[in-house]
Image (cartoon, rainbow, N blue to C red):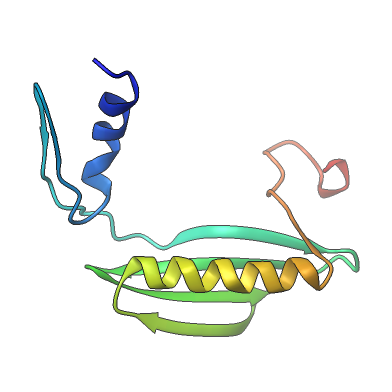
Length: 114
């Protein structure tokens, strides 16, 4: 059996509408995940931090990105895919404008260590 398919099948319940048919595997569950999700974090050379969230609402989603605590742009989408694609476009624009990807420091580490 292909090693990738069973691993993918384990994640399929997290994506609405995903259905997998493979000998011995049948996954048709719908997603129940409904928590806001951080899609990316960015840091500018001047120290500002930006982040983007997707906020699910069944098969729809809202997307927002902020600099610090101030929202910059937000949109509602009919699908998660639309929200993800829009945030990918926003990310590309910000990266061209001097922003770089950044991960929040792990507990016990200072921001200056990153």
